[in-house]
Every structure is written in structure tokens, then in C-alpha cells.
Amino acid sequence: MPVLHYRAEVVIAGAGIAGICAAIEALDRGRSVVLLDRDEPAQLGGLAREAFGGLWFAGTPEQRRWRIRDSAELGLRDWLAFGELGPEERWGRAWAETYVERCVADVHDWLTGLGIRFLPLPMWVERGLSGNGNSVPRWHVVQGTGLVLVETLARRLLEHPRRARLELKFQHRVDALTRAAGRICGVTGTVETQDQPFEATAESVVIASGGISGDLDRVRRHWPADCGRPPATLLNGAHRFADGHLHDAVSAAGAAVTHLDWQWNYAAGIRHWRPRRPAHGLSLVPPKSALWLNARGERIGPRPLVAGFDTHELVARLCAEPGGYGWLLLNRRIALRELAVSGAEFNPALRDRQRLKFLLEMATGQRWLYDQLTRNSEDVVLADDLPELVERMNAVNGDDVVDLAAVADAVVRYDAGIARGPRFHTDEQLLRIASARRWLGDRLRTCAFAPIGARRSRPLLAIRACVISRKSMGGIRSDLAGRVLDAAGRPLPGLYAAGEAAGFGGGGMHGKRSLEGTFLGGCILTGRSAGRNV
Image (cartoon, rainbow, N blue to C red; front, side, top):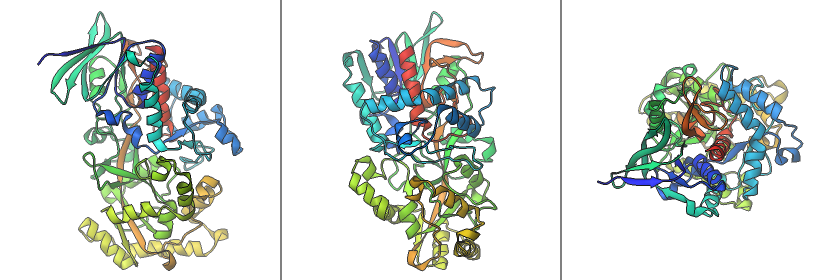
């Protein structure tokens, strides 16, 4: 079969939002672009289409409206402390500093200039267990979720004044880089629908192909050391083509690929009942008022697990428990107020910008979501009392591991602590709930000390929670121009990287933990930087 040939000044491998932003910037500068992607045309934008759409900013108009005193200096202090990003990480730190300094002008303001709007109330996530996370609310949610973000960027690309200088090629798998005269000058690969080889030549190549989290074998091979052993059950919350294929290709070309053990996984995954890829999972936003139990039904402790403070810690603690999974124990009242699923698919009112419906759900609870989960998910069980609930929990697992006495003891002790009143709360979960509810964004979505066993709040729910992959925070090492570096720190001429493939900048700009919202923002910033510099 003959080889297809493409020629442009810039070839970009990957049409997620990093690749789209790189293409927009290159077109802005008059460059001709071939944008290659392995997926179908309808999936332009990649995993961001499914994202909830939260972005991290420090010092925005939305913050100032709520009298939130924030700054790049404070944001960077929190970033470096939370990620444990040491001075030896030259390029990771440089990208962290660059993101914090430029995210408002180059991401927030650029997006609003394209018509993106954010919810007026910033949310407060990743506060840290000891005050070492986000000092103030910084999570800005796109009105319309990640889907509207992608559609806006895609429209900017497809309606670009220089659209004639862009070729978009889908279902093209890039396999290797080509080199001439000491410079990377193109890529080779296969059109998968036709099994036909192709080559694309250019002055510059941008790798924007995502991370490794869609390949669960790779995730396990590079599992974070401080999370113990990878769990037996690991769900997939990443893009199906985020498989590290091009990490291997750039490594073979001499690039440095670093910190693949810096991973951003979530602790509350459930199986998708309409899977679109192997082991497809949904990432729950775990209710703060739910009890985390281990596989035996014992409350995980002595320090209880509470969502919203340190996601990495939740994963590490869950992996240390028997079986590497747990149970979220709650009731209908808590579920309606607090339970959520991350992403556009299960937030239709926000995704479709139905403001009245969204406000109604905030006020009365997400009844549609509750019905979807309780009717369809094999990981969610309901019952009117604890004996029946435990029986159904064991039926889900096909064993008798969950102990009724342990579950009952956890509920009685927790509810008794609530009954003593806020003046006498000593349970750390109750103290964290009280702390969270001082911010309006959390007060709207967090119950005021809800007893688990209260009859008026039933039925009871138990949700089997497994670890789910999401983002790989390490990757291809790059400098602030987006140029790919070798092990000695020297640029490989003609080769650039952006987005998750580059660890969102530098091969790992977050360190071990993310302050959340820095993934979408990191893709946009690094994509724009690479596009400006190719």
C-alpha cells in the first residue's frame, strides 16, 4: 500500500486541547499546520470533552467579587508545598512559577475573550490536611463544563482566518519520529481505518498526545511508591489513547521522560454501566458526610478519610486497606445534597447551561443523578436498615467479608458524636465538615452534621469505591519554550511537547500532588507556549 505524504511547517501529534491551542497559536503566526489525532472527528478535544471543567487561577475577578485575597505569590507557595516540588526539579519548578504567574492573563483572560464564562463562585478543593494546600478558593468552573470549553476552542480553530493553512487528519496513529541533518523533521505512522502508512514532514513537531493513565498496565508499572502496591481492581478514568505510545517514541529519539510515578488518581471510582473502554470507571465526588469503611466494614482511621482536602492521601490510605478498595456509607439525604460525579456526562444542567435547573438542583438535590446511580450502578446498594444493607454489600462482592457489627459500631459512634452537639465535636470528620461549611461554596453542597442512621433520611446507601486512574503528572521534559530536552538538559532541535504528554510542563510541574484545576489550565498554557515558539 502506498505511503501517504503530508507536508507543513508544523506537525502536531494529538488534537486534545493542548494540540488545539498549539495549532491556534501557530496559525496566528502564519504557520501551516498538520494536526494528527488517533480518534474520530467527533472526539476533537479529547478527554476534556468529558471533564467537569474546573481551572485553577490565583487573582481573578471572580475571587475579588467574593473578597478573596489571593496572589501569584500565595498561589506559588501553596503549589510548591503541596506538591513537594523541591529545588532540584529545575524545569518542573520553572513551569510551576510560569503557570502561577501567567495563568490569569494567558488562560483565564484569553478564555473569557473567546466567550467562556465561569460560575461566579470559585470552589475550594485540595485544602491540604495541615493547611498546606489551597489557602483560598481557586477552582473556577466553566459554565457548560469541559464540553463547552472544547467546543469554544474547536470553533476558534475551525473558523480561524487562516483555516486554509490547517490540515486535520483523524484516525492517524503516530508511531515514530523522523530525523534529518540532526533535527526532528516529522513523524511516521498508520491510518488505522485503512491500515495505510503515512509520513508527515515539517520544520517542527509538537507532541501533545496525552499521558499514560489510559494504559492500566503502565499505571501499575509506575505506581507511586508512597501509595503502596497498586490495587487489584483499578478502573480507567483516562482517555483510551492516553497509553504512553509516544512517550516511547520520543524516548527512543533521545528525549528525557521523567516522573511517570507522579500520578493523579482518584479514590472513589465506580464502574460505568455504559463502558466506552476497558475497565471504564466514573469518578465520584465523595460526600464529606459519608463514612469511609474498609472492605470489612470498619471505619478507616484513626484519622478518618474526608474528601476535598488531599486526594493523593485518600488514594494512598485506600490502597493500604484490605483489597485496596472501600465503601462509602451514607443515606439518601446526604446523597441528594452532596453526591456528584465528575464530568460533563453526569452534570447535564451545568453542561447545557440550564441555569434555573442548575439552581434548583443546588437547592433541592440532584434527584436525576441519584436515580441514575441507584438504578444502574452495580457498585451502589440501597436498604432500609443496616442488616439488609450489609447483606447486599456482601452480595455485591460475592462473599461475607463485610461485618455487620463493624458497620453498626461505626454508625453508632459517628451519630453519637453528632448528637453531642457542635460544642463537643472531637471527631475529625465533623471538625473538617464544620471548617468546610464556613465557605459558601461548600455550605451549599455539604450537610450540617447529618446522622447516617436517621430514619427520616433513609434509605441507606453503600457505594463500593475503587481507585480510578486519571492523569499522569510526569512526562516529557521541556523548557519554557516547550522544547523537548534530553537527559543532559539539551534541546532536541525541532521537537516540542505540550499538555499532559509534557507533564503539563517541564516533565512534571505539579510535583507529587495537584491543587486541582491545573490540568486543563496546564494544557492550555503549554499548548499556547509551544504554538508560539515552533
